[in-house]
Length: 250
Ligand code: 6PG
Image (cartoon, rainbow, N blue to C red; front, side, top):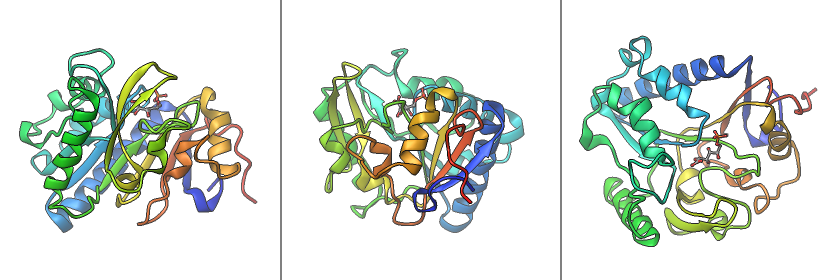
C-alpha cells in the first residue's frame, strides 16, 4: 500500500490495461455483493477519458456475462452542460462504450440532463435522487471518480463553493477553467457512498496524485481531498506512471 493511509487504499497496477481490468473485476465483485444483499446495485459513473477502457471492458462478454444488468442502476457523478449527444457528454461516452452494449433496462439509467438550464438540471437531479432514495441520504454502492491534473474530481473544481456544500446533493457551477457549466454530485452524496473508487493513470497525474495523497490537506486547492467517505476509505486504483511520485510508505 502506498500513500497516506488516512486518505485511502492505494493499489498500483502496471499500466492502463491492467487498471481497466482491475477496475472491471472490482465492479463485478461490488455488483454481485450489492445484489446479493440489497437486490440491486447503484453506481455513479465518472466521465472524462480514463474510465472509457473500463466501460468498454465491462461490455465484453467476459465481464458483462457476470453481471445481472437488470438489477444495476446507473447514475452520474458529474456531467457537462451539453446535450446528451454532444461529444463532450459523459452520458454519451458511457452510452457508446457500455450502456448500449449490455442488457441494462433504459428505466435503470438516470441521466443528468445537461441540455437543461444548469440550475434547473441540478435541481431536477437532486430531486430525482431524493425520490430514488426515499428522501434518505442516498448511499451509492459505488461512486467512480477520476482526478484532474488540477486536483478536481467529479466536477468539484478548485475554489468552487460546491467543494464545501453541506446540504444539496447536486449543484451546477460555472467552471472558468473549462469555460463551461458543469453539474456535479456534492461531497454530501459522494462521502455517503458505500464504496468510492478513483481511477488515475498516466504521468500527467503523478504530481497531483502525490499532492492529493501525501501533501497538506487543502481541499479548496485539491478538491479530490474532500472525498472522505463515512463508510470507509476511498480506493485509489492507479498505474505505475501515475504513482511515480508517491513516496513509498515505510
Ligand atoms: C469529467 C470527469 C472528471 C474527470 C477528470 C479526469 O467530467 O471530466 O468527471 O472529473 O474524472 O477530469 O479526467 P481524465 O480521465 O480525462 O483524465
